[in-house]
Image (cartoon, rainbow, N blue to C red):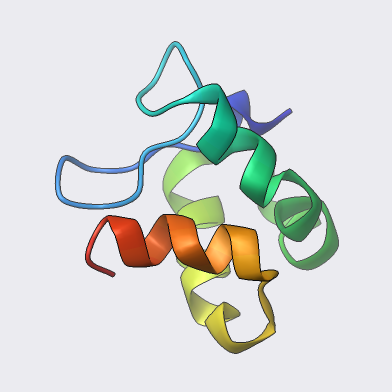
Amino acid sequence: MLAALTGVSEGPAFAQGHMGTPQEQKACTRDAQRFCRKDLGNDMAVQGCLQANRAKLSKSCSNVFKSHGM
């Protein structure tokens, strides 16, 4: 599911096979399912959706974005 998430080199990185760690993937799975269901399968759209919903993200997912300077 979240293997669809990816980040550009300076952005958050998710899911093995793309970039990032399993922990980052797990941190944002529920948020992606909740806020970005229509975008699942489109890496950049999910990342953009999560960023657009930044104020609503769980603390763990928000921390992923913060750790990548976003």
